[in-house]
Length: 149
Image 1: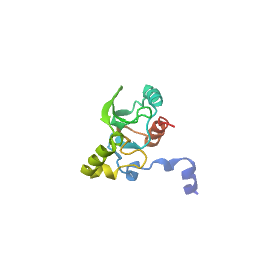
Image 2 (image 1 turned 60 degrees about the vertical axis):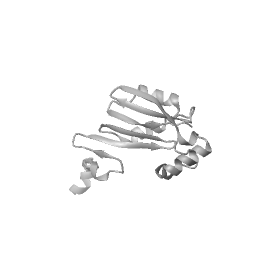
Image 3 (image 1 turned 90 degrees about the vertical axis):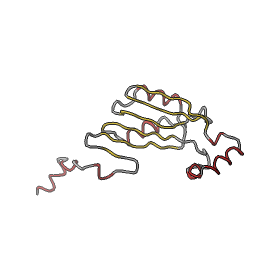
Image 4 (image 1 turned 120 degrees about the vertical axis):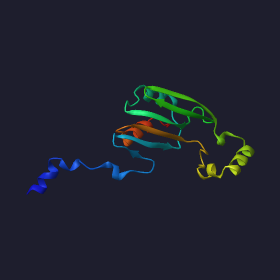
């Protein structure tokens, strides 16, 4: 009967993905979407440089904080706009401060305390990625390959 044929010919692939969004994800009618890439491990500088060479063209903009395994005390701002990719110092992570400074900062900023990680403190990679027809899984997998071992 017809129903069995329907799936065999691949006609069942026209789902509307916008109904299955996750936190921090959205897409508009032009296929422009956004998602947050969030990890607590640092990037390997060389691996990220290599990926930057073949940065996906459909990423319109990317901005956020990151850290590198070879310089764990420093926070970096990562920013792309079109084909331009920049990274610049953003200061030190609170986790790199002295014990007394850290205690004082955390006492004054309970929000930071909430996101504090036992091992890495406030260090994180948090990138907001905006682009057209983004394959979140593929982009996340590529970025994951840039993480330090």
